[in-house]
Image (cartoon, rainbow, N blue to C red; front, side, top):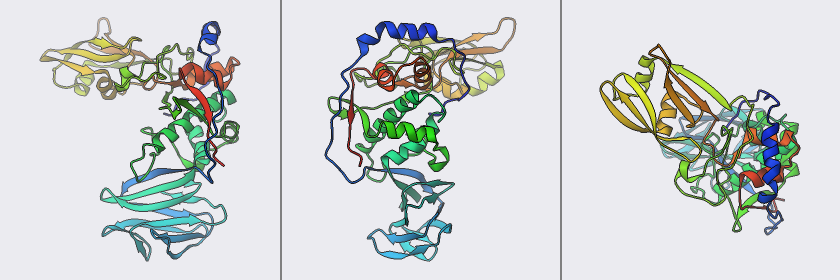
Length: 383
């Protein structure tokens, strides 16, 4: 999830003081577990999936191979072509195969779709189109993810916390791969844009935490994260149904940030178009909420009927930042005002909370221990 990067006001002192009071109760035993050595930990990232065509190229001379490893030809440095699915195969210029690899030489970078990426690319026919999969070293992948999910100029301790969370999430998904790729490149996985989002700040944070992941019972956790919760994160079962012992609701430290509070106003006509089936809407009241105030279900009453709608569906229909909101009719008008807090699903690490805690002098281990309860910081060998 990408967050806003406006600098927040310095008004989080009270929240940090609350953190100080109970930090000792949440401190975990952090230690390192070294996995068996491996040459490289690669991640398969789908940059395009089911596309009609994909542009590919390389900064250096690149070898084109088929799925069996046979060399078909070479792409010139800073040259490229358009790949397409063709009769169940992949075609790139005059080359065809059930799969095609484009492998830059001498550490070059590969062009996929609309940007430059580290690693190499595999082109496969899938879902009636073409899927382009970036095979990239996990640590190098994180250089980009960090800059897409946070501002590379944020405090290093916040960036380190995000690096560990993103590495853990990627490893968790890698262990549950669909067999073709491990993760996508958007908010349904983690945002990954290639070289354009790398910076000295993201490289420093990834390198400083190299190989570090969060575990529970010896397994990588589902290290969910979001922009801001609006004061308190959620228990995971209130968002995704399945309870997990490490994704528990905790006080957040996102006060004073750009997405802590927000408002939107809708005319009755606009609101009734966005939420259909009840005619002109007259009232919207919470039917069921989470322990921390997020809408799980809302009763929508109009002049032609009543519906019970999930908080997620309401937020989607109205373009809201989160499900932590209230809807009130503006006095003396037919308009409705939505007031809310936070940005995102509210589970796991709060990015703006991490920002404020880092500014308050807390280290990334403390930040992670707060947002991911009952976990251990372990280390895998990614040489």
